[in-house]
Image (cartoon, rainbow, N blue to C red; front, side, top):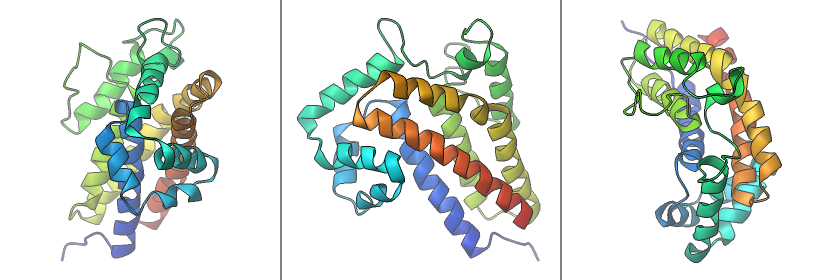
Length: 216
């Protein structure tokens, strides 16, 4: 009989899904009025306050920001991650790991190989770098979604091991520097909270994956 995922594990993977989706949205695009309304009308807003310093910053933003004030958050997103002038906190791994701080360096193609191992391809491959933080988070989300499917233990172990590998070879190698740079360049509660949550949650999640590996 095929072994399938146990209930407590389902809860772990569902919690990971929630946090990665939330963080990924914050770094993928400026917060929209739909995202703001969804959070303000949900029961999860108060839960943010349980995530220590990161959660308090995010709670203050989502609980008190109006649609009219979203423009300031959008401007801050562009100032930090897009430009049009100097990009203060580049959201690409290769910038932090290559000697010259350039895009499309070796780490970009290493990240791409991880995607290809699961028959995934960045829709803007060869046009934009594959190692944008939002795309790396989306990749982890994809692997986590596979874990939530009716997979046997052998497949589950492989998925967990690949996520550990991706953390060790990529995410843990540059997220600390990336988030430190954000914190040095912004006083905006949304992006201070986003940076702290990204840094704290990915470290915590890495250790969760190590524990899962031992338990499987």
